[in-house]
Length: 363
Image 1 (cartoon, rainbow, N blue to C red):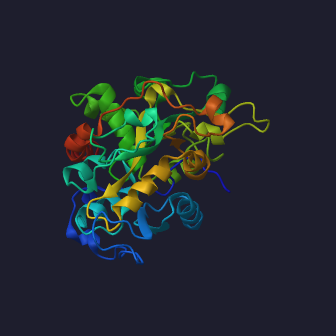
Image 2: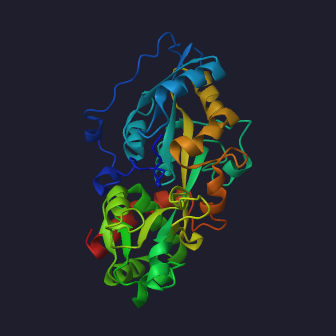
Image 3: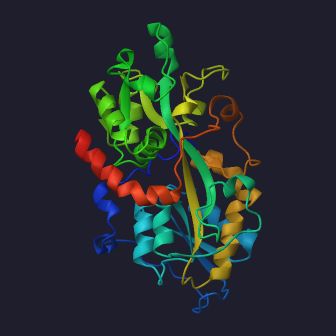
C-alpha cells in the first residue's frame, strides 16, 4: 500500500456552485444498485443491504465480504463521488434513496442531511465515548465513524536549516518573518481548506476571520485549489523543489514524513492550528432494508472495522481504543482542544462565510 500524508487525497470538491442543491447534480449520477431480494417495504429485513459511500472508501470487495460475514446480510457498496457529491445525491433522492445506508458525509455538510430529514434516527448501542462529542442530534440522525484534524504543517528541517523558529499559531502566519512561506487551500474548492477556514472562524470569530484571511494573503500566502498540488508541488516537506515550508494539511501528515531511522519526523503539525473533520454514517429514510442498514452501522463501529480505519483511510477511528500506527501516537496526535464549531453552526453559516471570503480575497 502507498501511504499518503493526507487522509483525503481524493475528497476535495467543494465548489461554491456545488453548495446549492440543484437538480443538475443528478445528471450522470450513479443509479441505485440492484438490491436483490431485499424487501420492498421500508423497515423489513431482506437478504441484501446497500451502502453508498464516497470514492475514497476502503477497498469495496474486501469491505463487502467482511461486512456480510459480520452482519449476516449480503452487503453491497456503491460510490457517489466525493463527500459533497454524496451529500447532494442523498438530499436529492430523499424518500427514494439510492441505498439503505450511507458513509462519508463530513461535518461541513452534515447539517444538510438533518435539515432535509434524509436519515432515519438510529442510536447504536455500541457507540464509542468519543463519538458522543461529535453527535449532530440527540436522536441519532448521524453516527460519527472517524475523525481527523486539519492543521498547518511545517517543514521543521527547512526551519532548522534556516535558523528560524517555526510558527506555532494562526497569529504567527501573518507575522513579517513568515512572509511568502505559506500555502493555503481554497475553501471554496477543497474540503480540507473549508475545514481550515472553520478553524479560523472558531478562533477569530465571524467578525474578524475575514480580516485574518486578508492579512494572510497580504503576507504573501499562496492559495491553491487542491491539496495534492499544495503539498507535493509547493511544500518543501513534500517536494525537494518546493519553496513554501508551511502548508495546510492534517495532524496525521507528520506520521508519514518520518526520518530514515523512524525516530523522528521531518514535519510537524502545530496543534493550536487544528480543527476537527468528522465523517458520519446513517440509515437512510425510506430504506428498503432499514434493519440491514442498522446492522451495517453497527459493523462500522465494531472493533473489526474501526481497527482498519487508520491504515486504509488515514484518519483516526472514532473508537479511541481502536488501532492506530505507533508513529501516529508520537508524531501525529489529535489535538486536545481543536478550534471547532458544531455541525449546526457550520450549516447556518457555511454558504455565507464562503461567499464573503471569496469576495474579500478574490477566490
